[in-house]
Length: 294
Image 1 (spheres, rainbow, N blue to C red):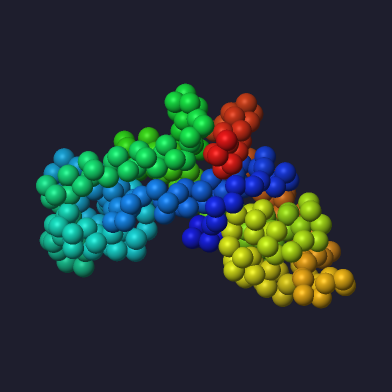
Image 2: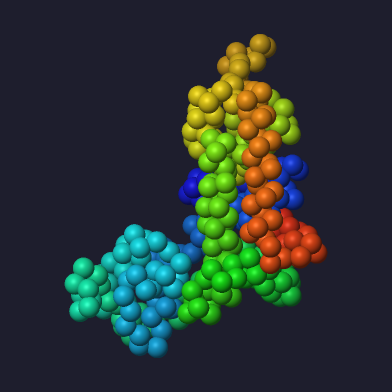
């Protein structure tokens, strides 16, 4: 599910509220929404991370920075251009590879990193208003266990302290793994959530799906269009209100959902293998509160 399609909905479907994978997706979506609500204009979280990676007068290639802060090369190229235009980094051709650039943080960039850290801290506060310091640290520790061995050894400490950073990184890895696991079934992770919603609630409208999953109505339409073409769901108009359509889960969809559920269980057992039973229960509880804002 593209996180850009996220809405501000904080409702959780009972059938999904105890699934760590779904909760991490919803938590990552909440981070995305909060970025737009909390950070002031001109403050980009990826640019902030890049400036952190250039601390101490280091000169580094764009690819090296991308690896350190765990973003795509395409994202880093865009961020580097913005930072250079603002005078926050110096960007020169890498003498060892003329096709790439090397970046150095300027004094203005160092000052910006110090200013922007306050905004990053404001974001953390906005995401966990009901959490104690101990609960934030517990969630952080659990997320780091899930990501053990997958983050760059030189990840800047402020990023390792950031729940927003850790949650979005967990989401990226779980989403990638789950998408690969679901390929034989012919669906993608958000369609699994959509069909689970139908299996739980029965026939409902697309707006209800949007609210329950926390994604835009336009994205739900795309997901349903694909599932309908595969014969897994069907749109039907209500007999007493022909203007209203509701979604029905078809037998093929029920079969695919059952297969997907088994794959999801196996995938999560592998991805959360570093956590014990009690730790998974705590992770679920803390993520539920993170998503709902309680």
